[in-house]
Image 1 (tube, rainbow, N blue to C red):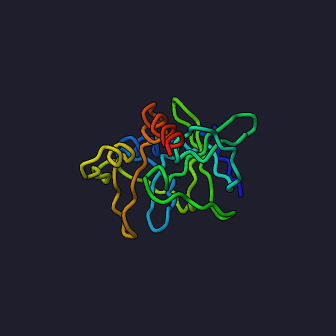
Image 2 (spheres, rainbow, N blue to C red):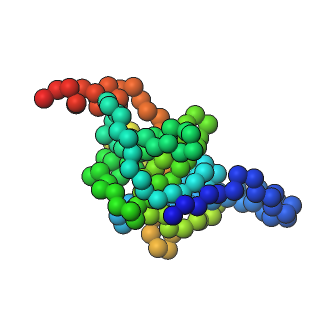
Image 3 (spheres, one colour):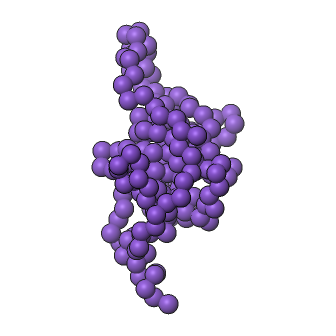
Length: 177
């Protein structure tokens, strides 16, 4: 299952554009990890594809599943569940990879499923509560309460910022008994 998103959509009508600017809304693709629902900025999503095996990379943090060759580009695949310090995903053909692109990187996010596209006004986004550790606050940019439950908005810049201390920690875990 592959879904390529158009890279050059026609501009919206002027009335629609004015309404969007006034309300300051954004769209997010929602994906699931178990019962939890996460939102990924639709402007960063390049493609949604079915799970395929990856090539592992030595000394990579445990949340990097490996890499794939996507039409000539080597793309790291992050296990979103493991990145959030949960049990790693055991991928099946039903899992999907959301290919995202930020200013600094292209990466794939392994998720259970993609479920919806939501439009969120900026005033609907709530702050992530501090829980005493920086990781959750940095990996999420906000929370959106919906009738069906809470959607946690993923901070892609922080999510794919591979810090040298994390890579060094992963390397030491491999080399120490």
